[in-house]
Structure formats: C-alpha cells, structure tokens
Amino acid sequence: MLPVILAGLVSGLGLIIAIGAQNAFVLRQGIRREHIGSVILICAVADILLISVGTAGVGALVSSQPTVLTVIRWLGAGYLLWFAWGSLRSAARPAGLVASRPASRGSVLTTALALTFLNPHVYLDTVLLLGTLAASHGEARWWFALGACVGSLVWFSALGLGAHALSRPLSSPTTWRVVDLLVALVMVVLAVRLLLG
Image (cartoon, rainbow, N blue to C red; front, side, top):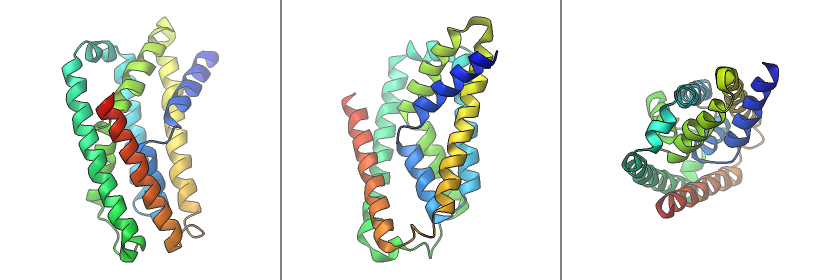
C-alpha cells in the first residue's frame, strides 16, 4: 500500500502547490500572524473532505452537471475580483499595510471558506482529478486518497507556519505592499481564467 499512498501524496502535492487564491490567502495570513492555525485547519479539512468526496465517486456525478460548474465558476470569479480589489486598496493605503487592526476570526475564517468552496479549480483538481486518479487504483483508492490528504495537511501547515516564522523579516511596509499587489494579481488572473475557461 505504501506505493499507492506515495502516489496519492505526490499527486496531491503536485496539484496543490501551484499558487492560487487559497495558497495566497494562507501565505498572507501567515505573514500577518492572524488566526493562521484556524486557517490551516479549515483549508486542510476542506481539502480532505473534497478528496474524500471525489474518491467516493461524486466527482463523476458533478462532471455530468455542467450547469453546477458554470454557476460556481461565475460566483468564484466575482469573489476573486472582490478580494483582488481589497488587496489593491490595502496596497494603496499605508495604514492597510500595518497589521494594527487585525481582522476578526469570523471574517478570516469566512474568507478561507469562500476562497476554498467558491473556487471551481478546487472542484476540478481535488474532486474530479484526484477522484479519477484514486478510482484508477481500484480497491486501493482510499490509500491513494490518504496520501493526497496527508499532502494537503503537510502543504498548508508548511506554507502557513513558514510564513508565520518569516513574518518579522517580511513585515516592512514595502513587503506588505508587494504581497498585497501579488495577491491582487493572482486573484485577477484566476478570475479571468475562470471567466474565459
């Protein structure tokens, strides 16, 4: 079973490491040192849930309903553009570059959930693609899913806690401005790709 678990781990990491809305948010919260444990937990648990749903075969059902994916795509693009606008405003205002007014736990967790569940790429990668890869392992599909779940947990922990550990050297206003601009750029690119895709 170890080779199947390792295949799931590598596949899960390969899909999740690419910078996206969720990763950019985890990075930003780690640097800000705001509720990072809760953000890591939400992102990892959501991935584990979606990997399990895909492995159970729901991915095939969702892919047969293109209307659902279209609605999620438009909602996701709208949310990404709204989030990009907030990052641009934060980069433009010096007060927005300082973590003096921390966001509430509720707003941070709501954003983490929205960036996870309103992102169609999460469903395409985690539910459909990983679900299909897991199914190709037949009886061992849950071992593959276990590897992918471990990969998700390791990645979000490393990203969030690594950013948290480096937050002091990265806390200058210039760094905040660059981070906010990069987050905004990533969000706009992802939104455009969703709308064109």
